[in-house]
Structure formats: C-alpha cells, structure tokens
Length: 307
Image 1 (cartoon, rainbow, N blue to C red):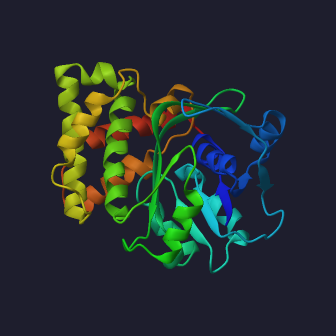
Image 2 (cartoon, rainbow, N blue to C red):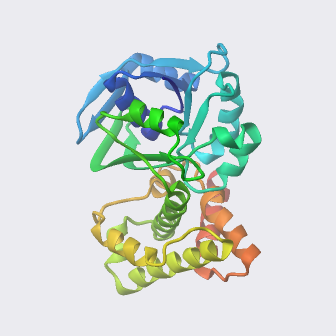
C-alpha cells in the first residue's frame, strides 16, 4: 500500500520511519525547511526501541498529483487546514484518511474535505520530540498508534491496513471502539497539558503536593462531566484509571504543550481546552479550573504572538 504522511515531526516522523524501516512504501508531505533538514541529516530516530537513520521520499506542496492508498495526518491542529488543502490532490475516492491529532474537533473539519466514509478515527501515545538537528528523540516504552473504523466495525479495509502496519518496531493497533479511545485520550491530554502548562511544571511536583493532586482530579472531573453531558462514550471509572496513570508517570514528564510554551512556540489551546469550554457552555456545565487554564493559555498567546 502507498502511504502518505502529512508532517515529518516527532509523531509523523517516528511512525512513518518505523514503517519505512519495515519496508513499506512511505512518502512524507513536508514544508521546504523540513525537507532540507531531512536531505542534510536524514530521518534520524534515536529511541529505546532501536535507532535508525533513513532517507525517505518527500513531497513539498503540490509537486504532482500522485494518488495514495492511505494518508496519515500528523500535523498540529493549527496547521491542519493548510495541510488538508495541500493533501487534496493526492486523495482519491479509495484513499483512507487516518488523523493522529489530539482532541475531537478536527473530525468535523476532515468531513468537510473528504467523504466521512474515507475518514477513520486515529490517535497515538508517544513521548517524542525533535532536537536542534531535527532528529526524533523517543525515550519511553510507550509508542502506540491506534486506528479504527468510526463505526467500530472490523472491515476488510481495516484488516488490510492492520496488515500493512504489522511487524514494525512501533505498536500499531486496530481498535473496535475508536470513538471511546479518542474521547478518553482527549480527556487525559487536555488535563495533563492543561495542569502542567498552568503550573509551568513537570507532573511530579504538581502530583506530589496535596493541593496539586486535588487540582488534577478536579480538572479530570470537570472535563469528564462535560464530555458525558455532551454524549461522549466515556467509561464510568476513567478518572480513577487516569489518576493511577498520573501516579505512574516519571516525575520529570512534561506535556508537549508545556515544552512548546518553554520554547515560545505556538500551542493548541483553542483545539484542546477551548473546544471543551464551548462544549461545557452548550451543555450547561460549570468548569472554573478549565476556564482559568484556558485564560492562562490565551494570555501566553497574547504575550508571544502580538501580531
């Protein structure tokens, strides 16, 4: 199968690199600066699961209209619309779209560009970042990409994709309940990113103080109740499960949002916490801590992106 990955950052580059390493036909759709970086240094993955240096196929912009069987979208939310416009020439009616963005709001946008039947659900769990040379640094055991039909059915298409993704050094998993998996990740990532960004701290010092731990649980509950009232398929015990997961995190663990703030980079405040606030207002749920976090993030954006 011919696979196009939109974005060759820490997420797209890692999973795409593992597929190339296996022998799959993968091309990256990248910006000119990233193309030059990859041409100079190669696609380098330094990982606890094995290091590799690759020289991938790349496309910049609309160089051609070569069709692909699978398109994996691994951009940040604020680059999504540009990415979708750029990727349209490579999509045919048989092309399957797999988004790996955090959150849920992007599914609505994807359905305006492509047929809903073409769009699968998708998410990933990975702690990875790029160093100054553009190498992907991946230090933890977690490196999972999860995908599935929005309906939950295990179709022939899903099985073909599962086969293409199998036998790599990363974990690719076919889900029969992708909607719940995406909402659950949204709950975790919006809480984890929100609390670490608000406190400007890794999770350990927040978790290991009594009030800090209380705030983590409060934020989980505000978001969980919002999602339940919205009608999302949330498991009843999910907050207890995620509090245990918080306890298992290394004390130095930071959210990607906090790392972006520390670099003075753009963040996904509107796509993550902002969209949840809209849902909360629609269903009449009070979310004071979530509102405070969102305001904190918007002040950061005002200070760093005045134009």
